[in-house]
Amino acid sequence: MKTFAYTAFTPDGKRRRGVVVAEDEADASAKVSAQGLLPSEISSQTAARPTRARARFIDHDMLSVFTRQMAVLLSAGMAADAALEAVQTAAGASRIERLAAEARAGLMEGEPLSQALERAGGALPAWFTAAIRAGEHSGDLDAVFLTLADHLESTASDRAAITSALIYPAFVAGVAVIVCAVLMVTVAPEIVAMFAATGQELPPLTLAVLGMVDFIQDYWPWLAALLAGLVALGVASNRVTALKNRRDRLVLRLPLAGRFLRMAEAAAYLRTLALVINSRLPLTEALRFAADVLGTEGFTLEARAAGEALRRGENLSSALSRLSFLHPVARQLIQAGEASARLGPMSDRAAVLAESWLRTERKRVAVVLEPAAMVVVGAMVLVIVLAVLLPIFDMQAMVGS
Image 1: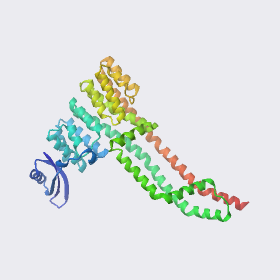
Image 2: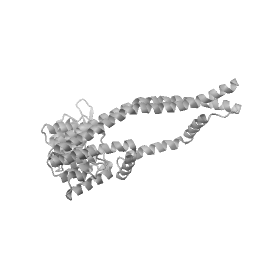
Image 3: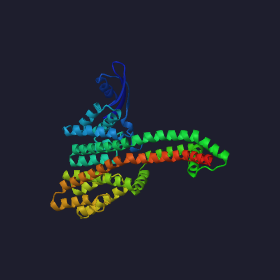
Image 4: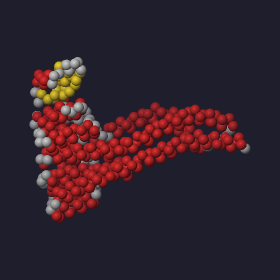
């Protein structure tokens, strides 16, 4: 089976684009016509299935919708290929439709679902396909999709809360910058000219702000290029492994960002570990799949070392002591599960606890972020306003004397 992209027209003349899985171009044309459409252009996509380096990236929100749809359909008892076909038919978004179609084409070629999704055009995160691979081996694929959907929706909710907390300060900062720029362009030069005529020196704060304004005016092309370079570097750090590893090492050294990264990795690791353990797979397999979920190079190496220690005969809690990102309480819960022969429920409780900590920390940051941003904006406005007002006060004092 191959994936074909088509351009067709509805009976009322509207253009419609989509993807269909078919044996050949004639079969694809027949399937498009069966939808009541008039095919205009059909091209094969399977021959050029994108690699991760040049794939069409699917954003977080689209991935969350796709995962929830798959979770619902698989929980209803549908097979994976039928679920992908249903998602493709009722996707409502071209990216989800293309992802489902290309994954279904790979599935019908004999690939497992995890590999089909990994090679599909959505460039899914490595931890996402690793979790699905664990579900395939454990036989609980619907549970994996449900867990992934909950995780993605929770992350999206937390991200939306943080973004909402930044909208008002960003708006105020934008207005403040415009007002301050008008002051520095119109009022400040007049004040400078008056002080130059009287031979008086400007206040140090005013000189510093004027020097900064002159620097921006003289070097704004270079500053714009630097900003564009930083944006490009940020995008590349998500796609190039070497840059991503350097970025992660830098983030781990930062107090708040490093704490977030450790908590997110711990939650993903423990959730996958609990899922595989509760699926009655061997512990060695559980540690292997959990290590594949991690996205930080250093943590992945630690997790693989823990798996090697387990294979050498160490118990699970001792092997997990090598993981620097796990909270001691999580290790204690797993140790208690080993001692009481209730490893499955206790590992699940450790995962829930890690996810709860991460969610609470994100909410706390979202609450603190808005007033902190307002303080920063207020301080910036205060400095610029003082830089304008201080010369006026000095001039009034000079005239009065």
